[in-house]
Length: 325
Image (cartoon, rainbow, N blue to C red; front, side, top):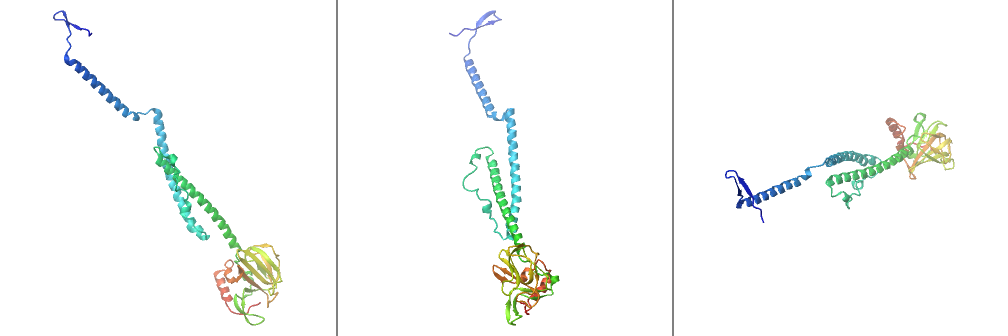
């Protein structure tokens, strides 16, 4: 049962009953409904904008995240710069070093092999910066792979260079008798008149005339395989195995001062000019072998002659005269 309410009327000096108006309830209900709607709308706005309202800790974490993103971007740029430098090294490796040492270039497929097929970066997916992180990680992996391949290639080049140096030291490259000690270059490689039979015969070496006792030098590094006088016609002679298929022979020596098995260096004195064996006058008969075949020694004097001296000795070697052995 609702309570009856009264109010005091000062004009009539009496209490009057408060009459309830019919539209008041509707108005109150409408105002209440409007208030609830406004309150709900405000709460919705607060909820929507709540992520932009961050705590100090969240702000600190966001700054760290932004800094890490910046560092990743800088790292990507450094990786790109390193890849550009490495690409120049790879180009020189393929087109300069390997060409010089007669080695096959390394194809790009081999330098970047191992990065196709399975997705090796699946664990890095699903994050806000996944694309940046995956791209950086992939570039770093490729760069590491290329560095490993290039490092192994340079190791191989170093070995090739060392082997090339040994080859250059071993190849006969000087005259067995010094130019200033020569009386003359008597006979070259080719058909010559035999001094004993006077028949035209192929002369497989070069004859360097000099006074008896003139030093004879090893023309390249190697190991003495013969130092005796048991070969027919050569008299006292020395044979040096230079490796790589090269050998040299020094015949008609007055005497030799090396022994079989001894290692010698280019320029070492191995004997002295003489006229032993089948010889007509003091001289050093010199032959060069490649893979067991005699070849023209004229092609192996680049280490001791000037261009003018080489042209002169070439002219004399081509003269078809009489040999001394």
